Length: 250
Ligand SMILES: CC(C)(COP(=O)(O)OP(=O)(O)OC[C@H]1O[C@@H](n2cnc3c(N)ncnc32)[C@H](O)[C@@H]1OP(=O)(O)O)[C@@H](O)C(=O)NCCC(=O)NCCS
Image (tube, rainbow, N blue to C red; front, side):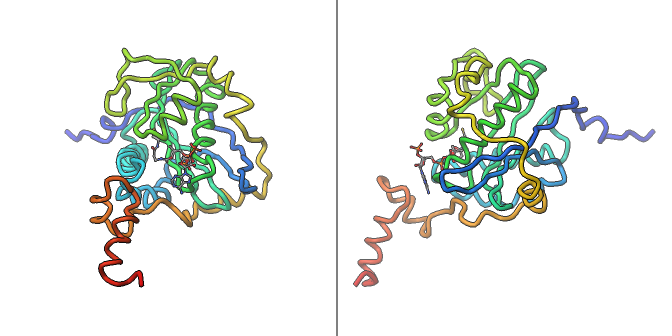
């Protein structure tokens, strides 16, 4: 008797309403499009996240490793009710955010990864995913954790999230924090920005291709130096000493 194992392994997703794309004008003046992608786009995103697994700085390695699993699980239908949004500047991948529905009322925020630093692209992409849960999917709250101090500052501190410490989060089981509709309403106008509809040309450029990020976070030039540089995570001090010894700084 033949058994279709794939049918057993594959959860049946609930239909999710689509995220209506939006665009945000960054401090640099660039227009950034935030839009939902589907399974067929995942192979174009994976290599850029995979490279971050070797970037120790700001916990990119941990977050990228976990996000790889989530993106692959989405691609292979091994996770229930997941969605993925991307932020693009001129087609270039600037941020990736994802999450899923725990049930009709409660969302589970997975990851936010910024590939272009210093312009709050991660913050804007995170706001878009909260908008997806609260405004589009009409959920009551989203469960969130931070894996990095920057993430903690961006989500827990900036939004003033509420504790839900009795609920272990899916990302490793630490205590959850919650973004409720009331918290989101308070953040409107300051943390949640962007406009709709996205001008046709801008959206077409974003949809045409997910281009590689030009200046993504990279591992330090000298990994060994980085591991020795206790007070300098970029390791420039140790590399400088080495170059002195080698006479390269003369
Ligand atoms: C958390 C994260 C999504 C925030 O993204 P973001 O809003 O675009 O913010 P950035 O990372 O660019 O900037 C964060 C801080 O680093 C500073 N920074 C700016 N340029 C930087 C650079 N080239 N390198 C490092 N830090 C930089 C910024 O000034 C900013 O400080 P601020 O909070 O006072 O504004 C992003 O830092 C990230 O992807 N981190 C790794 C993965 C992660 O931790 N994800 C969240 C899991 S909870």
